Image: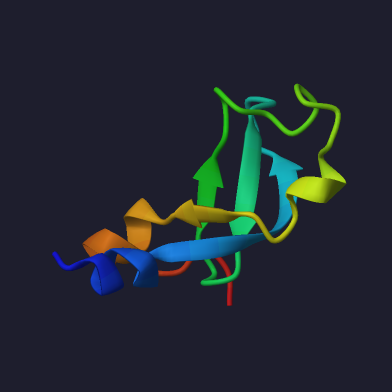
Length: 69
């Protein structure tokens, strides 16, 4: 995978929510959700400043269906 293709999988965080097990989940602009158990937004005290930060979307890489429309 080229550098450009890898960057295509990086998606900005648009929000956060807790799942049914009270684990933090990042909501990505692509429509996928990604758990952030090891980097929860409250840990740094900057949850709202993490909005827009880009995460590599593993679901985009695998062609998974969207979690939301």
